[in-house]
Image (cartoon, rainbow, N blue to C red; front, side, top):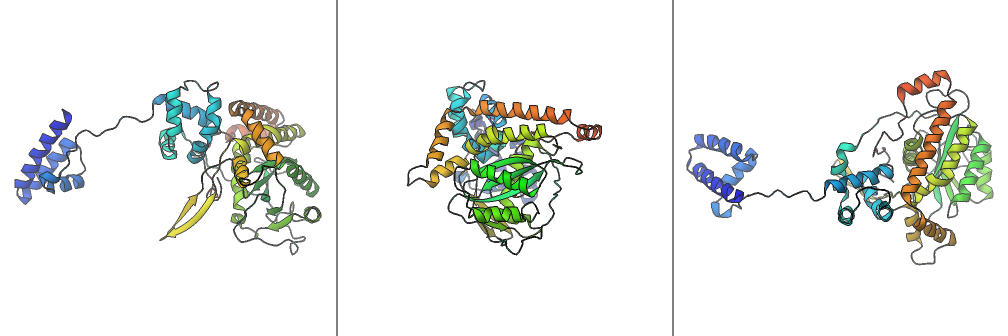
Length: 414
Protein backbone atom coordinates (compact mmCIF):
# COMPACT_ATOMS: atom_id res chain seq x y z
CA UNK A 1 0.00 0.00 0.00
CA UNK A 2 2.80 2.41 0.86
CA UNK A 3 4.39 1.76 -2.54
CA UNK A 4 1.13 2.47 -4.36
CA UNK A 5 0.63 5.76 -2.47
CA UNK A 6 4.19 6.80 -3.28
CA UNK A 7 3.68 6.02 -6.96
CA UNK A 8 0.45 8.07 -7.11
CA UNK A 9 2.02 11.05 -5.34
CA UNK A 10 5.07 10.92 -7.58
CA UNK A 11 2.88 10.88 -10.69
CA UNK A 12 0.91 13.93 -9.50
CA UNK A 13 4.06 15.95 -8.79
CA UNK A 14 5.65 14.77 -12.06
CA UNK A 15 2.68 16.08 -14.07
CA UNK A 16 2.54 19.39 -12.13
CA UNK A 17 6.27 19.92 -12.53
CA UNK A 18 6.09 19.22 -16.27
CA UNK A 19 3.23 21.72 -16.80
CA UNK A 20 4.57 24.45 -14.54
CA UNK A 21 6.30 27.57 -15.84
CA UNK A 22 9.93 28.13 -14.95
CA UNK A 23 9.07 30.45 -12.03
CA UNK A 24 6.52 27.99 -10.57
CA UNK A 25 8.79 24.92 -10.79
CA UNK A 26 10.67 25.97 -7.64
CA UNK A 27 7.44 25.97 -5.62
CA UNK A 28 6.46 22.48 -6.89
CA UNK A 29 9.97 21.25 -6.14
CA UNK A 30 9.79 22.59 -2.57
CA UNK A 31 6.48 20.81 -1.96
CA UNK A 32 7.83 17.57 -3.41
CA UNK A 33 10.95 17.64 -1.21
CA UNK A 34 8.88 18.32 1.92
CA UNK A 35 6.50 15.48 1.11
CA UNK A 36 9.14 12.86 0.28
CA UNK A 37 12.23 13.98 2.19
CA UNK A 38 14.34 13.67 -0.98
CA UNK A 39 17.43 15.80 -1.56
CA UNK A 40 16.68 18.73 -3.88
CA UNK A 41 19.20 17.66 -6.55
CA UNK A 42 17.83 14.11 -6.61
CA UNK A 43 14.27 15.47 -6.85
CA UNK A 44 15.20 17.65 -9.89
CA UNK A 45 16.70 14.65 -11.70
CA UNK A 46 13.69 12.47 -10.83
CA UNK A 47 11.02 14.96 -11.97
CA UNK A 48 12.83 15.79 -15.22
CA UNK A 49 12.88 12.15 -16.38
CA UNK A 50 10.19 10.79 -18.73
CA UNK A 51 7.52 8.99 -16.69
CA UNK A 52 8.09 5.62 -18.37
CA UNK A 53 11.79 5.70 -17.36
CA UNK A 54 11.15 6.42 -13.68
CA UNK A 55 11.46 3.49 -11.28
CA UNK A 56 8.93 3.95 -8.52
CA UNK A 57 10.92 4.38 -5.29
CA UNK A 58 8.41 2.66 -3.02
CA UNK A 59 9.55 1.50 0.40
CA UNK A 60 13.06 0.12 0.07
CA UNK A 61 14.23 0.07 3.65
CA UNK A 62 15.88 -3.17 4.66
CA UNK A 63 15.64 -4.55 8.13
CA UNK A 64 18.77 -4.96 10.22
CA UNK A 65 20.98 -7.77 8.95
CA UNK A 66 22.50 -8.48 12.35
CA UNK A 67 20.45 -8.78 15.52
CA UNK A 68 21.16 -6.83 18.69
CA UNK A 69 22.17 -10.09 20.36
CA UNK A 70 24.78 -10.68 17.65
CA UNK A 71 26.30 -7.25 18.27
CA UNK A 72 26.34 -7.88 22.04
CA UNK A 73 28.21 -11.17 21.50
CA UNK A 74 30.57 -9.45 19.05
CA UNK A 75 31.31 -6.78 21.66
CA UNK A 76 32.09 -9.41 24.31
CA UNK A 77 34.56 -11.19 22.00
CA UNK A 78 36.08 -7.84 20.96
CA UNK A 79 36.58 -6.93 24.62
CA UNK A 80 38.06 -10.32 25.56
CA UNK A 81 40.44 -10.11 22.59
CA UNK A 82 41.88 -6.78 23.68
CA UNK A 83 39.82 -4.49 21.38
CA UNK A 84 41.51 -5.41 18.05
CA UNK A 85 41.04 -3.46 14.83
CA UNK A 86 38.07 -4.61 12.70
CA UNK A 87 40.17 -6.48 10.12
CA UNK A 88 41.96 -8.33 12.90
CA UNK A 89 38.70 -8.99 14.75
CA UNK A 90 37.20 -10.51 11.59
CA UNK A 91 40.19 -12.87 11.30
CA UNK A 92 40.10 -13.57 15.05
CA UNK A 93 36.48 -14.79 15.12
CA UNK A 94 37.07 -18.29 13.60
CA UNK A 95 39.73 -18.97 16.25
CA UNK A 96 37.64 -17.77 19.20
CA UNK A 97 34.10 -18.87 18.28
CA UNK A 98 34.65 -22.62 19.00
CA UNK A 99 35.49 -21.66 22.60
CA UNK A 100 32.89 -18.92 23.02
CA UNK A 101 29.94 -21.10 24.07
CA UNK A 102 31.19 -21.46 27.63
CA UNK A 103 32.17 -17.80 28.07
CA UNK A 104 29.82 -15.57 26.08
CA UNK A 105 26.16 -15.25 27.08
CA UNK A 106 23.62 -15.54 24.27
CA UNK A 107 25.69 -17.33 21.62
CA UNK A 108 23.20 -19.38 19.59
CA UNK A 109 23.55 -21.13 16.24
CA UNK A 110 21.87 -18.17 14.51
CA UNK A 111 24.19 -15.65 16.21
CA UNK A 112 27.24 -17.72 15.33
CA UNK A 113 26.15 -17.87 11.68
CA UNK A 114 25.74 -14.08 11.59
CA UNK A 115 29.15 -13.56 13.18
CA UNK A 116 30.77 -15.71 10.51
CA UNK A 117 29.17 -13.55 7.80
CA UNK A 118 29.77 -10.08 9.24
CA UNK A 119 32.29 -7.92 7.36
CA UNK A 120 35.05 -5.77 8.77
CA UNK A 121 33.31 -2.61 7.55
CA UNK A 122 30.09 -3.64 9.31
CA UNK A 123 32.07 -4.37 12.49
CA UNK A 124 33.39 -0.80 12.38
CA UNK A 125 29.87 0.58 12.03
CA UNK A 126 28.34 -1.54 14.78
CA UNK A 127 31.12 -0.91 17.31
CA UNK A 128 31.62 2.76 16.48
CA UNK A 129 29.73 4.07 19.52
CA UNK A 130 31.71 1.87 21.92
CA UNK A 131 35.16 2.95 20.79
CA UNK A 132 37.11 5.44 22.81
CA UNK A 133 40.50 6.93 22.08
CA UNK A 134 43.13 8.25 24.43
CA UNK A 135 45.85 10.51 23.07
CA UNK A 136 49.16 10.41 24.90
CA UNK A 137 52.59 11.59 23.89
CA UNK A 138 55.53 9.26 24.36
CA UNK A 139 58.82 10.98 25.13
CA UNK A 140 61.73 8.83 24.03
CA UNK A 141 64.70 8.38 26.33
CA UNK A 142 67.18 6.96 23.80
CA UNK A 143 70.64 8.50 23.69
CA UNK A 144 72.64 7.90 20.52
CA UNK A 145 75.67 5.67 20.82
CA UNK A 146 78.93 6.34 19.01
CA UNK A 147 80.98 3.21 19.75
CA UNK A 148 81.37 0.78 16.83
CA UNK A 149 79.00 2.72 14.60
CA UNK A 150 81.26 2.23 11.61
CA UNK A 151 81.12 -1.56 12.19
CA UNK A 152 77.31 -1.75 12.24
CA UNK A 153 75.83 -0.90 8.82
CA UNK A 154 72.82 1.37 8.39
CA UNK A 155 69.76 -0.23 6.82
CA UNK A 156 67.65 2.34 4.96
CA UNK A 157 65.87 0.16 2.40
CA UNK A 158 62.50 -1.48 3.08
CA UNK A 159 62.43 -4.93 4.64
CA UNK A 160 61.73 -7.44 1.87
CA UNK A 161 62.38 -10.74 3.63
CA UNK A 162 61.06 -14.09 2.40
CA UNK A 163 61.68 -16.18 5.52
CA UNK A 164 61.33 -15.79 9.29
CA UNK A 165 64.29 -14.85 11.47
CA UNK A 166 65.02 -11.23 10.53
CA UNK A 167 63.81 -8.99 13.34
CA UNK A 168 63.68 -5.45 14.73
CA UNK A 169 64.37 -4.74 18.41
CA UNK A 170 63.76 -1.77 20.70
CA UNK A 171 63.60 -0.78 24.36
CA UNK A 172 60.41 0.74 25.83
CA UNK A 173 60.85 2.78 29.00
CA UNK A 174 58.54 2.42 32.01
CA UNK A 175 59.72 5.56 33.81
CA UNK A 176 56.30 7.15 34.27
CA UNK A 177 56.45 10.87 35.04
CA UNK A 178 59.90 10.70 36.63
CA UNK A 179 63.00 9.54 34.73
CA UNK A 180 65.36 9.66 37.69
CA UNK A 181 66.81 6.53 39.26
CA UNK A 182 66.60 3.01 37.88
CA UNK A 183 63.40 1.65 36.41
CA UNK A 184 62.14 -1.15 34.17
CA UNK A 185 62.49 -1.28 30.39
CA UNK A 186 60.76 -3.75 28.05
CA UNK A 187 63.01 -5.24 25.36
CA UNK A 188 60.69 -5.82 22.43
CA UNK A 189 61.47 -8.01 19.40
CA UNK A 190 59.32 -8.59 16.32
CA UNK A 191 59.89 -10.82 13.31
CA UNK A 192 59.38 -9.02 10.00
CA UNK A 193 58.08 -12.00 8.00
CA UNK A 194 55.60 -13.53 10.43
CA UNK A 195 54.93 -10.74 12.93
CA UNK A 196 55.97 -13.05 15.78
CA UNK A 197 56.79 -10.99 18.87
CA UNK A 198 58.68 -11.66 22.08
CA UNK A 199 59.25 -9.29 25.01
CA UNK A 200 61.36 -9.33 28.16
CA UNK A 201 61.53 -6.81 31.03
CA UNK A 202 64.96 -5.65 32.23
CA UNK A 203 65.97 -3.35 35.08
CA UNK A 204 67.75 -0.38 33.53
CA UNK A 205 69.27 -0.44 30.07
CA UNK A 206 72.69 -1.79 30.84
CA UNK A 207 74.57 -3.43 27.99
CA UNK A 208 74.97 -6.88 29.59
CA UNK A 209 71.34 -6.93 30.76
CA UNK A 210 70.09 -6.24 27.24
CA UNK A 211 72.29 -9.00 25.79
CA UNK A 212 71.06 -11.50 28.40
CA UNK A 213 67.44 -10.57 27.67
CA UNK A 214 68.03 -10.95 23.91
CA UNK A 215 69.50 -14.42 24.50
CA UNK A 216 66.37 -15.35 26.49
CA UNK A 217 64.14 -14.09 23.66
CA UNK A 218 66.20 -16.03 21.11
CA UNK A 219 65.59 -19.23 23.08
CA UNK A 220 61.80 -18.78 22.88
CA UNK A 221 61.58 -18.15 19.14
CA UNK A 222 60.20 -21.09 17.09
CA UNK A 223 62.73 -20.30 14.34
CA UNK A 224 66.39 -19.35 14.11
CA UNK A 225 67.32 -15.72 14.78
CA UNK A 226 69.11 -14.56 11.62
CA UNK A 227 69.21 -10.80 11.99
CA UNK A 228 68.40 -7.86 14.24
CA UNK A 229 67.88 -4.19 13.39
CA UNK A 230 67.93 -1.55 16.13
CA UNK A 231 68.03 2.19 16.69
CA UNK A 232 71.22 4.03 17.66
CA UNK A 233 70.90 3.88 21.44
CA UNK A 234 73.94 2.93 23.51
CA UNK A 235 72.05 -0.07 24.86
CA UNK A 236 72.41 -1.59 21.37
CA UNK A 237 75.43 0.10 19.80
CA UNK A 238 78.07 -1.40 22.05
CA UNK A 239 80.77 -4.06 22.08
CA UNK A 240 78.76 -6.61 24.07
CA UNK A 241 75.90 -6.87 21.58
CA UNK A 242 78.24 -6.58 18.59
CA UNK A 243 80.37 -9.54 19.77
CA UNK A 244 77.24 -11.51 20.67
CA UNK A 245 75.95 -11.18 17.09
CA UNK A 246 79.35 -11.90 15.56
CA UNK A 247 79.79 -15.11 17.59
CA UNK A 248 76.34 -16.42 16.64
CA UNK A 249 76.40 -15.29 12.98
CA UNK A 250 73.47 -12.92 13.49
CA UNK A 251 73.22 -10.02 11.04
CA UNK A 252 73.30 -6.73 12.97
CA UNK A 253 72.10 -3.50 11.32
CA UNK A 254 70.83 -0.16 12.59
CA UNK A 255 68.52 2.61 11.42
CA UNK A 256 69.49 6.21 10.74
CA UNK A 257 69.72 8.53 13.76
CA UNK A 258 66.44 10.35 14.52
CA UNK A 259 64.59 8.41 11.77
CA UNK A 260 62.03 6.31 13.64
CA UNK A 261 60.38 5.17 10.42
CA UNK A 262 63.47 3.06 9.71
CA UNK A 263 62.23 0.84 12.56
CA UNK A 264 58.51 1.23 11.89
CA UNK A 265 57.61 -2.43 12.51
CA UNK A 266 58.92 -2.47 16.07
CA UNK A 267 57.61 1.03 16.80
CA UNK A 268 54.09 -0.21 16.06
CA UNK A 269 54.61 -3.36 18.16
CA UNK A 270 55.79 -1.16 21.03
CA UNK A 271 52.19 0.04 21.25
CA UNK A 272 50.29 -3.22 20.79
CA UNK A 273 52.56 -5.42 22.92
CA UNK A 274 53.79 -3.01 25.61
CA UNK A 275 52.10 0.41 25.89
CA UNK A 276 48.56 -0.87 25.37
CA UNK A 277 49.18 -3.47 28.09
CA UNK A 278 51.15 -1.54 30.72
CA UNK A 279 50.46 2.08 29.82
CA UNK A 280 52.81 4.92 30.78
CA UNK A 281 53.17 4.31 34.52
CA UNK A 282 56.42 3.83 36.41
CA UNK A 283 57.65 0.30 37.22
CA UNK A 284 60.84 0.19 39.25
CA UNK A 285 60.92 -2.70 41.76
CA UNK A 286 62.27 -6.28 41.52
CA UNK A 287 58.83 -7.72 42.38
CA UNK A 288 57.19 -5.85 39.52
CA UNK A 289 60.03 -6.86 37.18
CA UNK A 290 59.54 -10.53 38.04
CA UNK A 291 55.75 -10.30 37.63
CA UNK A 292 56.08 -8.58 34.25
CA UNK A 293 58.46 -11.25 32.97
CA UNK A 294 56.12 -13.98 34.20
CA UNK A 295 53.37 -12.46 32.05
CA UNK A 296 55.66 -11.80 29.08
CA UNK A 297 57.08 -15.35 29.04
CA UNK A 298 53.77 -17.18 29.36
CA UNK A 299 50.23 -15.93 28.75
CA UNK A 300 50.91 -12.68 26.88
CA UNK A 301 53.19 -14.21 24.24
CA UNK A 302 50.62 -16.96 23.62
CA UNK A 303 47.78 -14.46 23.29
CA UNK A 304 49.65 -12.20 20.86
CA UNK A 305 51.24 -14.92 18.70
CA UNK A 306 48.51 -17.58 18.69
CA UNK A 307 45.20 -15.72 18.90
CA UNK A 308 45.78 -12.13 17.70
CA UNK A 309 45.78 -11.73 13.88
CA UNK A 310 47.67 -8.86 12.26
CA UNK A 311 47.89 -7.49 8.73
CA UNK A 312 50.99 -6.72 6.69
CA UNK A 313 51.52 -4.09 4.02
CA UNK A 314 51.25 -5.72 0.59
CA UNK A 315 51.87 -2.65 -1.57
CA UNK A 316 51.53 1.11 -1.99
CA UNK A 317 50.17 3.01 -4.99
CA UNK A 318 50.26 6.79 -5.35
CA UNK A 319 47.01 8.21 -6.74
CA UNK A 320 47.44 11.94 -7.24
CA UNK A 321 48.46 13.43 -3.90
CA UNK A 322 47.32 10.39 -1.94
CA UNK A 323 49.13 7.18 -1.11
CA UNK A 324 46.87 4.14 -1.10
CA UNK A 325 48.03 1.13 0.88
CA UNK A 326 46.95 -2.46 0.32
CA UNK A 327 47.19 -5.04 3.08
CA UNK A 328 47.25 -8.81 2.98
CA UNK A 329 44.70 -11.02 4.73
CA UNK A 330 44.87 -10.80 8.51
CA UNK A 331 46.60 -13.85 10.06
CA UNK A 332 48.13 -14.75 13.38
CA UNK A 333 51.94 -15.01 13.51
CA UNK A 334 51.62 -18.76 14.08
CA UNK A 335 49.45 -19.15 10.98
CA UNK A 336 52.01 -17.19 8.93
CA UNK A 337 54.73 -19.60 10.08
CA UNK A 338 52.56 -22.57 9.08
CA UNK A 339 51.94 -20.99 5.65
CA UNK A 340 55.70 -20.55 5.19
CA UNK A 341 56.14 -24.34 5.40
CA UNK A 342 53.16 -25.14 3.16
CA UNK A 343 55.20 -27.27 0.71
CA UNK A 344 57.36 -29.07 3.28
CA UNK A 345 56.92 -30.87 6.60
CA UNK A 346 56.32 -28.61 9.58
CA UNK A 347 59.29 -28.30 11.96
CA UNK A 348 58.70 -29.97 15.31
CA UNK A 349 58.54 -26.65 17.29
CA UNK A 350 55.85 -25.23 14.97
CA UNK A 351 53.86 -28.48 14.99
CA UNK A 352 53.98 -28.55 18.80
CA UNK A 353 52.67 -24.98 18.96
CA UNK A 354 49.77 -25.85 16.65
CA UNK A 355 48.84 -28.82 18.82
CA UNK A 356 48.94 -26.75 21.99
CA UNK A 357 46.84 -23.95 20.47
CA UNK A 358 44.08 -26.41 19.57
CA UNK A 359 43.79 -27.32 23.26
CA UNK A 360 43.95 -23.78 24.68
CA UNK A 361 40.83 -21.71 25.40
CA UNK A 362 41.53 -18.06 24.42
CA UNK A 363 38.87 -16.75 26.82
CA UNK A 364 40.57 -18.48 29.76
CA UNK A 365 43.90 -17.13 28.53
CA UNK A 366 42.51 -13.57 28.37
CA UNK A 367 41.14 -13.93 31.91
CA UNK A 368 44.56 -15.01 33.23
CA UNK A 369 46.20 -12.04 31.50
CA UNK A 370 43.74 -9.66 33.19
CA UNK A 371 44.34 -11.24 36.62
CA UNK A 372 48.10 -10.95 36.27
CA UNK A 373 47.84 -7.35 35.08
CA UNK A 374 45.70 -6.53 38.13
CA UNK A 375 48.32 -8.16 40.37
CA UNK A 376 51.10 -6.13 38.71
CA UNK A 377 49.08 -2.94 39.22
CA UNK A 378 48.66 -3.73 42.92
CA UNK A 379 52.41 -4.30 43.26
CA UNK A 380 53.13 -1.03 41.49
CA UNK A 381 50.78 1.02 43.66
CA UNK A 382 52.06 -0.63 46.85
CA UNK A 383 55.62 0.46 46.04
CA UNK A 384 54.88 4.02 44.87
CA UNK A 385 56.42 6.98 46.67
CA UNK A 386 53.93 9.69 47.82
CA UNK A 387 55.00 11.94 44.94
CA UNK A 388 54.33 9.25 42.34
CA UNK A 389 51.04 8.30 43.99
CA UNK A 390 49.60 11.81 43.63
CA UNK A 391 50.70 12.14 40.03
CA UNK A 392 49.41 8.69 39.07
CA UNK A 393 46.00 9.33 40.61
CA UNK A 394 45.66 12.53 38.62
CA UNK A 395 46.65 11.00 35.29
CA UNK A 396 45.61 7.38 35.58
CA UNK A 397 46.79 4.50 33.46
CA UNK A 398 45.77 4.31 29.80
CA UNK A 399 45.66 0.51 29.81
CA UNK A 400 42.35 -0.58 28.29
CA UNK A 401 41.12 2.99 27.73
CA UNK A 402 42.36 3.40 24.18
CA UNK A 403 40.08 0.97 22.40
CA UNK A 404 41.00 0.10 18.82
CA UNK A 405 43.59 2.88 18.64
CA UNK A 406 46.05 2.60 15.77
CA UNK A 407 49.56 4.02 15.63
CA UNK A 408 51.20 6.17 12.95
CA UNK A 409 53.14 3.10 11.81
CA UNK A 410 50.13 0.76 11.59
CA UNK A 411 50.38 0.94 7.79
CA UNK A 412 53.31 -1.49 7.87
CA UNK A 413 52.02 -4.17 10.21
CA UNK A 414 49.02 -3.97 12.52
